[in-house]
Image (cartoon, rainbow, N blue to C red; front, side, top):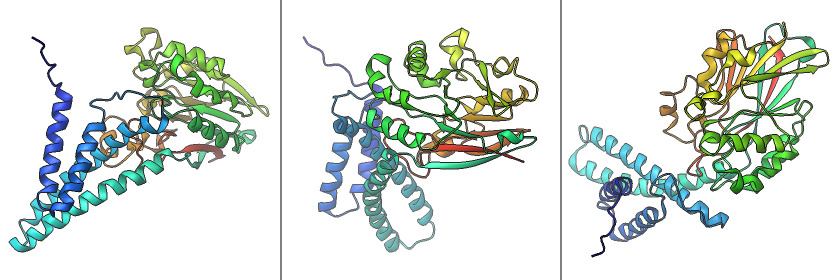
Length: 373
């Protein structure tokens, strides 16, 4: 007798959530809308990856479909949940006939809003990230470093849906900035070198006065960090692994340091992140800049005497409402902040992870300019 495989817990849980969404949104609306909404829900469930893995077909547009379905599901679920909370509050204040109208109207609103927000979020995720200009005031900045610029890209996530054309466009935009330094602050890839080397090849064209510098993110360790370190070096980047280089900029010194990902020791004990080690031996009086994928490195970086830390990892939450959950894990979510005497800048990311979705947290290529405080 042939036994059918049992449904895994993730697909079953997703199915229950779809039943909840369908029951709450389709029952109060007209029959024609029920049919259209039902088709949308069935298609979304059929195409959506039943976990964080979707089979790649090799066709760029087709590979996007499961992740778009995941983004649509996220909005359907969040908006349905918010609708139910709102209706629960309204039930305490509205007359029954008014509440009945609100139930139908709010269901129609969610069914219309979720696809529209998904389309808008898709556009915002897939466009070439705009340049965000940030001025960083440094106390005691050497006159030669006034106007020193760092172009930062982070969290590109080259992989299932981000391919060579996307990377090409990012490289072209970064090269127009004429930066003194280019910093790649981790989570560049989502997959092994043998699958993605063709798509990361454009990074070899990055140009700046003092070169390109890279630090590992957690996704590099998921994807084979040692192989990617070798590949980034082949592409011309300097990979900083708990160490630093000293840049001579018109007679002034910048100690540009980098640490491995905050959680790297879980994958390789020799890669334990260590800001103090990265700063060791830096010239007296040099400006100290740290590249660290996760903002959680900031406390140790401040103790190690860094003036500025550049990070990513958070995506700024990527799309609402997840921005509120990022704050539960990281001390800083996005933008320029200060910790003691050290500045920390957290990029919202240049690409995206999972659903091709940006909403309320735009992607960015960052040009940081140092100025005297």
